[in-house]
Structures are given as structure tokens and as C-alpha cells.
Amino acid sequence: MMPGARLQAAVELLAAIHGGTSPADRVSAAFFRQRRYMGGQDRRDVIDRVYAVLRRRSALDWWIDRTPSGPPEDRERARVIASLVLIDGWNADRIAGSFDGGHYRPDPLDRAEALLARSLAGQAISHPEQPRWVRLEYPEWLDADLADAFGERLEAEMSALMVEASLDLRCNSLKATREEAIAALARDDIAGVPTPLSPLGLRVRGRPALAATESFRSGLVEVQDEGSQLIALLTDARPGMRVVDFCAGAGGKTLALAAAMGNKGSIIASDVLAGRVERAATRLRRAGAHNVTRRAISGERDPWVKRHAGGFDRVLVDAPCGGSGTWRRNPDAKWRFSREDLGEVVALQERILASAARLVRPGGRLVYATCSLLPVENREQVGKFLAGAPDFSSLAIEQVWGEANPTPPCPTSGPWLSLTPASHGTDGFFVAVMQRAAAAAKT
Image 1 (cartoon, helix red, strand yellow):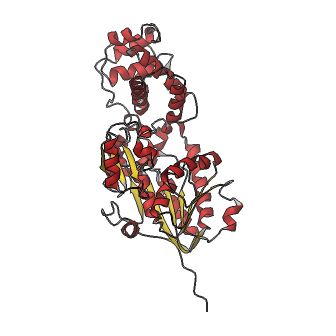
Image 2: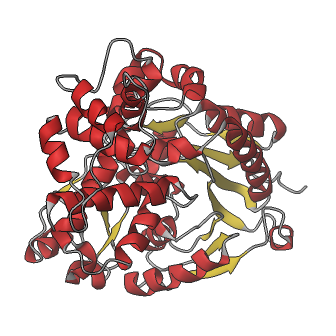
Image 3: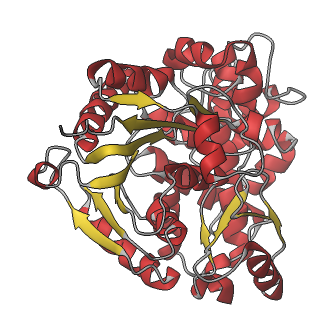
């Protein structure tokens, strides 16, 4: 494809992403399925352009809105034009040469678009007059929440969320050691190195077509961020235990739990989205995980919970959340999330946590995790739960870490684990481990 055709595809994909409610990765997959004529490099160039715009959307819009004669009418075209100048350093003539109305190429620049391209010449994408939420790319309404979460580290943490995430894999210990997985990936011409925190993690260089490799097809490795791997490790599920993955989703942590248990004991993988629970079957078969029962539930108050109260050694609640910790991978998500959405998800988390706690046996553990950076979804949520559940107490994360993952040392101290891209190189994750008091001895 000619450069102009790739730009037109980027404009169309951005319009599809911003015009719907589905995540950018799903929209992109559907977009390319309808355009199978596009080669691999063409697709990669389009994706790179689109995600560059998504990661710097706020700053690009700030500049577009300052266009001397007013912003161009077509916002997606304007964003691509602005990105060409501010990110790639194109001049107005080069842009006009690609926006020439040729076959599959964008229509010629209108007057406002041409003026935008000329007015941005020589500018940097960041500007001293930009508010920090523009410069650091997050919604203005989250400014106080993020400042509360990070204080003086706000700049560093938000800057890290603007950078593309690494590709992390988890070695499936049911089938191979980490060293064996690294060797197998090397045979597929994929270079992987051990992750610093997870003893099962591999960090892969580049963007390989992993699904086409024998390492992936045979179940030696699974795609899973290092932080997500640590959630499963800190659940400390052991062979012979009864475990519930209460919000199992597509089953990534379920797979990790099954491997930790050596296929001994039992895991219930439940979720309200029956389709996701069913799709996890393919991953379970590939991984060789045989001790998992998949269960769709109607909600956090499903009668199944009452019938099985007090029956499990470990209950993992990887709760629905705002997803701020995953903005490196899902930069579009921040612009679809509102204050009202946050209020709804916090209320849902509270209900889920209270219901899932009923499943924990005396002496068992409840693990609460999110991929959020916001205190209201994390420490405040756990505080509310513990205030209303006197038979549960929080375990020091260093203690849990030492029991489940003795090397390397725990990266944080205190009652919970908080991981961030800037501090730990992972997505943003929060984990709290709470233990239920043992039943009083009968006399």
C-alpha cells in the first residue's frame, strides 16, 4: 500500500474506534478481517499510527482546537494530520502530497486542514500552557484521584502509561520450565528474557506472531502481563486445595492457578459472561489444565454462592474495574470512562467482594485484585470490606509473597501489593490478601 492509503485506513479505523463502544483491539481486529487484502506490514503501520493518535489524543486535540481559523470539521482526519506534524515531523507539503484524493488515498486537504498543518510546523506535542491532564493524557475529572494515588510521582507514573507495553508471557509449568520455554521460543525465532518479579514470566522482544508458533500452539506459554501473573502467585493455590476464580473472564488467571496446583485439587472458574467462560475451554485444553470446572453465574448473588458458602480454601476476586492500570495497552479506554461509570463499578466491586467472601472457609483466604490505579477501587474498597467483615483480616503482602514466591524479594511493603509501569515495569495492579479467622474449637 502507498503511504496515503495507509493514512486513509488509519482515519477510517480511528472513526470506527471513536464511533462505538467496543475496545480498540476488538474494533481493529474486525476492521482488518474486512480488509484481508492488506499485508502484514501495512496492518502494522496502520496500527502504529492509530495507537500513536490514541496515546496522545488529548495533546493532539489541544493543538487542533487552537487552529487559527478554528478546528477542521473532520476530527479524525485532523488528529492524523496533527500527529504527522507533531509526532513524525512531516511538513505541510509532504502531508498535502499524501492527502491528494488518489486511489485509496485521503481526499485533498481543505482550507482548515491545510492551515492546521502549516500552523503546527516546528511545534512540539507538549507545550508549557497545556494543563497537566492534557500533557499527561488522562481525563480532567481524574486529576484529583490520580494526584491522591501518586503524589509527587504523578508525572513519572502517567508518563509511563503513555508508552507501549511490553509483551509478557507466562511459562506453563504443567509442560515446561521457564528455561525450556525460552529455548522453545528461540526455535521459533523469538527472543525472550526472564521477567524480574514473576518466576514464570518471559518478556519478549518485538511483536512476534505468537499464535502461529509451536510454543504457543502446544501450550508451553500463555500471554499474560507479569503483574497479572503475580496475582495468581499471591493467591497461593496449592495442590489439593479447593479454589474459586470468581471473576474468571477469559481464564488467564485460572490457567495460572491450575499450573500452580499441578492439576491436583479443584478450581471453579465462574463469570457472569457465559460466552467468555465457554471460550476459556480452548485455552484450558491447550494448557493441559484438567482440574477446572467452568461455571456461568447470573451475578454476584447467584444462588450457587449460598449453596457453597464456606467451602473453599482460596477465593480470587479479580474484580471488574475502570482499568486505569492497563492504559498502556488500552489508551482508548480512558476516554470512554466517566465519573458515573466509576461510581457504578465501585458499587459493583463492593457487592462482589461481600458475596465472594461467603465462599471462603474458616482459615481460608480471600484475594482481591484490580487492574486499577485509583484508591477508591483499591485500598478504600478493601478498607470498607474489612470494616464490615470482622472475621477477615489483612495479611502483610511481604508475608504472602515470602510464602508463595520467595525470590526475588517483595517489591513493596505494607498490607497490599501495588504495581505500576513506572515503578515495576508491569501494568498497574492492586492485590490485597485477607484471611478468614479459623473456626473456634468445639468444647
